[in-house]
Length: 259
Image (cartoon, rainbow, N blue to C red):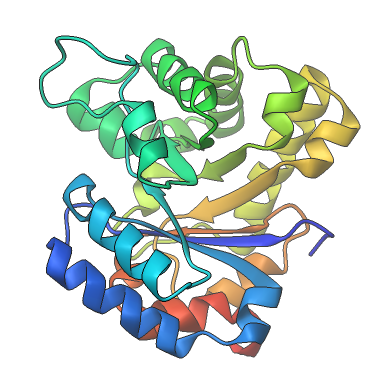
């Protein structure tokens, strides 16, 4: 691990009503200690319908859990039925906005240009983008995983300044490992994180690259988080299914104790 503060993000996806979200946050907060918060920044990404409830319980109890959105509109306002603008998310106290997740790319046809527009929308509202990149199994089998993923990074960061990039978060999620139980080996995940950081050096500077936090996502569990966190360029995790259990997610947050 480096001097970068670790970041553990729970992506709830299409789970939890606003009432269930309140119960979850309370359970997670009960399990986390001062030592846990000293070790890692902890965040959850609820569905849009639960954001206000999560904000209310976190503010009322002065909890140290951060939260953000699973998506963001590329538009600040207008006739865009069903979309949620960055300004709305900022007013709800969100810290993060996830952009470019493979499920958005796959199921909603989001291309690199739209991902970049959403990232720019997040930055314009002072939200911290979590830019998700990653390759499919055929791309990896063809030996093109690194070039494909680095190209996604470059496209996602088009028009982003070094100052803006330094505060961003990158999440590497190999598509074939999301929700499948499969996980990239720690060495493979670490290699890709290193390639992404090297690309940041080329795009910006070594100082900028050192500041950016790179997460790994894809079937992360308490049983494998320690080996992933041992990789020099991995600074945390974007956790899907395992984050739905507050006890399991708390165990991921305190990864040094895991085997």
